[in-house]
Length: 122
Image (cartoon, rainbow, N blue to C red; front, side, top):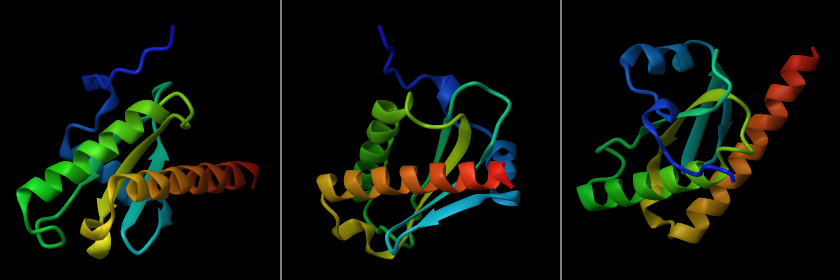
């Protein structure tokens, strides 16, 4: 049976983990979200989130966005490449409802995978 947990090993926890992704990332973006990815030494993907107060003022809205993004990652973790991912929220993200946010995130997961495979073929 497939495990859909979101355990500690699936998270980017330290600033060093985040800085590795920021150094030389693959990017996929939209006006509301940017996903950065880089390879890791594990056999599973890991996720880090950045939802700045400057972009989403209310804590309840930031928490909702993070909850939806974590849930999307949790459900798609077995389809994702074993990379470290950082999702950065941008300006208009507060206007998206949960379904729109999930569709956008799924589209960006596919774009990152396509770019990673293109990079590996070079």
